[in-house]
Each structure stands twice: as C-alpha cells, then as structure tokens.
Length: 186
Ligand code: ZN
Image (cartoon, rainbow, N blue to C red; front, side, top):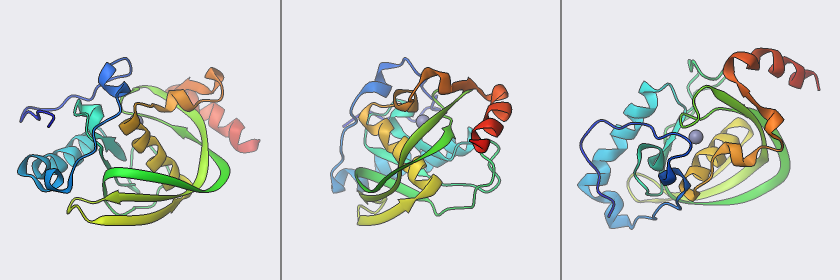
C-alpha cells in the first residue's frame, strides 16, 4: 500500500514522474481502510482549496486509482456550470457510448496557468467503486463526460496536454477570452 502521510498535500505539476504512472487499483478492503477513508475528505479539501472541479490522487503524489469530481456552479475556474453530485471514484472502467467528439477548454491543477482545447467522446459509461466500496454504474455526457475523462486519465498516467490535436490549442488563461470567442464562432 502506498504510504500516505498526514502532512499537507502539494499538487504535483507536469513533469513530476508520479503523474505518469498507472496508479494502483485498490481492493474493497483497502477502500474501506481508515487510511483511505481519511484520505477522501482530504482530497475534497485540497480540490476546493485549489478551486478545482476534480482531483485525482496521483496529483497529490498518491499513486492509487482514486479521483473526486464535483462541478460547482460558483466555480472561479469554469463558467456556466451546474452543480453536480459529489463523485468519489475508485478503480474506474470507461466505455464510450457515443464516439462523437465534443471540445472544451480544459485546465488542470497540475498544469497551472494554461488551458487546452481538447476533443473527447461526448458520452460514456463509467463503472467504479464508490467510497463505500459499492459497485456503481453511471452514464455521463456533455461537460461532465469531459471532466470524468480528464480526471480518470490521471489514473493512467495521462494529462490533457497528451490529448491536444495541436500544440496551437494550448494557451495561457489570460489569452483564453479572445480565443474562446473565436472557437464559439466556428
Ligand atoms: Zn488534471
């Protein structure tokens, strides 16, 4: 089992090799262990402190297949969101239900200051274990589908920059307002 310290967690940045590992799947017993049950609220705390809408355990240096996701309507980082439920996701399996791609300007707490326009399938089925180690099956679409694919990519060593069609689709946040306007007019 990965050693989890009680200390404050720092968000790892692009270039840190932990972000490139395939994270370890946990058993149901491991999910229910005090160590992991204590980690889950810590994940929410780190995510909310950073203003994120999702966080994967490898981003705080813990290479296990755990991610938390919650869309917030009052997010500072993303406009026009509706609140979603809180998802705690272990050992996910993704199945594309609609290959049609949709593009969004994605950001990542591990790639601060940048945004990238990434196209991903618009509808998926996700099977996973929740915080009680119960088997869940959900269908996600639209922006939530992108957020799931982005976060779950972290569990397999991928970042959104790997999913860009072109490095021309990578920009600084402060340049985004102009470019996003053009993309919307496409
Ligand atoms: Zn990310």
